[in-house]
Length: 327
Ligand SMILES: C[S@@+](CC[C@H](N)C(=O)[O-])C[C@H]1O[C@@H](n2cnc3c(N)ncnc32)[C@H](O)[C@@H]1O
Image (cartoon, rainbow, N blue to C red; front, side):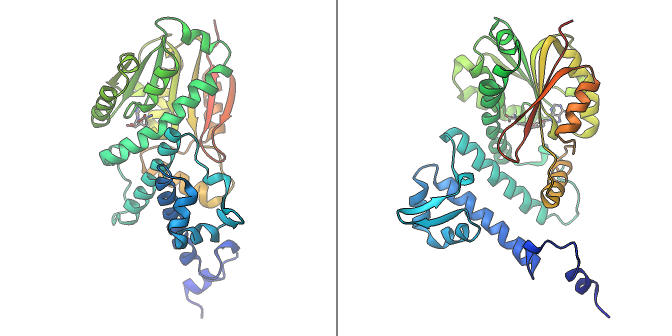
């Protein structure tokens, strides 16, 4: 008679990519991720080719999965390892490191309980994850808003107001204030500790930009202003499903007529591993598992129109924008 684990070994559902010893392959994948993150972090201050050449064994790990290969003039790097401008690259690699740290924390958790959300993270993780959203703020200001009819014009008007929901350490709020020099950016967050970190970040930022950013404690579900904001940013995956359901109608009401709400969302993923990991980490971290399509539907059901989506990096978050009718 076969044991349960022998039966599992013959399971027709097991991915052929995982070979004869799937657990060992997945463990090696974690180390491959460590090789990627360590090489990319070092490449923030020197050329990636030099970083790879200095540790050929680590480079061989990346080569084994096709991320680098030896060319006649040195290493050739897969585009997915290419780093964008230095601020964006730093944010992106710090976010990957924070994700690895969270995986270690999940692995060492003996209770199987959820992490207690964002608030259970160390200051270091809050800062590194938060700073990673600088890139999102810049993309929002430079690439998304210019493609939302009427939005840039409204934000160019003196005294225009932007609401940054779940403002965290204020990185995205600062990027928006930098992108829209006439606007005031109001960040709200449920966590006092993250807001304290955010105030320190503001104090260290360009005073001309930071002066137009204010951070306050507040739950998105309790926003009670009507027709107040020209743009609202919502990092939807980070709110619990209960909070998100309560918040959406309040945020729609808080949009000025003709103004836009932009929500960060996670796209549906075909790959079962990535989809299930995404949903586990989202809910474990105090968030929800709504995907891009679901968020679009919710916004339209609440009366917003002109819904459209903006992919970021391949497989990464997708921004969903929808507009409150002008009258
Ligand atoms: C990804 S973090 C935001 C990072 C942020 N953009 C930054 O620059 O640091 C998501 C934030 O949403 C906050 N949050 C979660 N639920 C919330 C709610 N119901 N209302 C307001 N903020 C909430 C969390 O406390 C967390 O700080």
